[in-house]
Image (cartoon, rainbow, N blue to C red; front, side):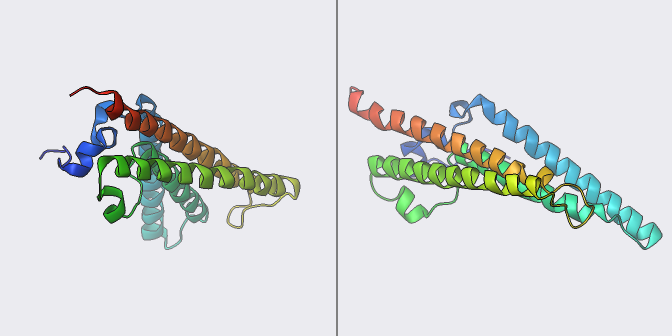
Length: 182
């Protein structure tokens, strides 16, 4: 089974999006975090299933930890998707038209993602501060709520950094065809 991506006008126009050699080496961070979070989710869920099967009761903390891990997983995977330029977009507009148009739309998308998650990172710092200041505790196991909410600005800042990096890479590839000689 081959894992190579299909070649066509869209993948030829954006060589960095599909080639593993062109993606940042630092994506190993997101890849390993994804593996660790998925393994933790599987172990927690499996342990809860076993306990529920043998004792007809379940661990109370598993749901709260699982929800947190699923949110963290979504943000980590979102960061990797942005860095690889594989985030959600409308393919009709993103891949239609000329290569220059596709690159400009990719740059616009990266800038928009950077702006959105930059705003989320800044605003969520206030949420973390309020959770800490007012001593909010989680509903399931009663730990400080900021233990969970601190990760939203951290992962949002990571996504912002990845989007800025993608924007920079796209702006460099957008200038390359002008200087290239046939």
